[in-house]
Image (cartoon, rainbow, N blue to C red):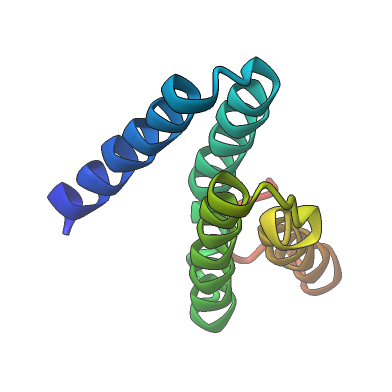
Length: 109
């Protein structure tokens, strides 16, 4: 599974740079790389939601949709920011639940 994730990351980099070599659009390259970095960052930060399994599964699904939104941007040049940044919702919901219910998971202190 880890090898598949690494291959997906490398394939995404390959697609981004292949699109740049075809179009020479530096703005699209920077937007795609920044978005990809943000998706990877959200994936790493999203591990905080792991103690609440349904929320973690929702986060994984939203990450897959965000990755699909990046691919759609690369192919069709239409940027759906609300799909790409949707994993922030699950992280925010987790932090809200931890604030309301207490930090019994040891995340917030």
